[in-house]
Amino acid sequence: MMRLFDFCVNIWYNCDVMLCISQKSSEDSCKAFTCKKNKLQAKKFAAVPFSRRVVFVPHCMRNIAVCAAVEKNSCYVCVECGGCKISEISKLVKELNYQALYVVKGGRAIQRIIKEQVPKAVVGIACFFEGAQAFKMLWGKNVAVQFVALTKDGCVTTNTDLIEVTKVLKYNTTKSPQIVR
Image (cartoon, rainbow, N blue to C red; front, side):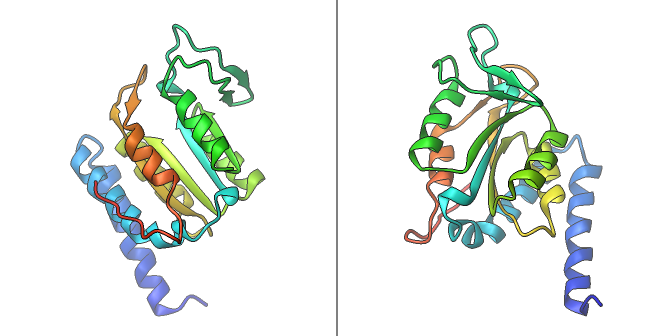
């Protein structure tokens, strides 16, 4: 039986999500939502060892003119060709000994990977709307989430801030995470 507190939190969370999603055209509402969720999950995320974290990067960040990534199932495998920022993110993920990096084509791939890999934490790079969707998808599961927004969104040749991505990837319990977004 669900405790009253859990019930209230569940209603509060779902109202937050619905507000963001119902105002699909309002990036500000999704931005506020994702920033709030990042702050709420920062300590839990920081406590998870790098080896139990996965990173999801949208395929739209690839520079398709030069990308040498290999398509595998519903993802691309970055070969670190240097054609886009995913290459730099991939190198850092390997250096930090993360569980994995996935260059995903969509949300269903994320659901499948979470089910198969069972990470304890996730770093997601996406537009604000997709970030809010990911928080909703992972809420109630035992997965800490941190979101990094795209600095240029759209569906082709998107971009992100590598300094912000690096900060989030390096969050750990020995340093207090400072999330300023």
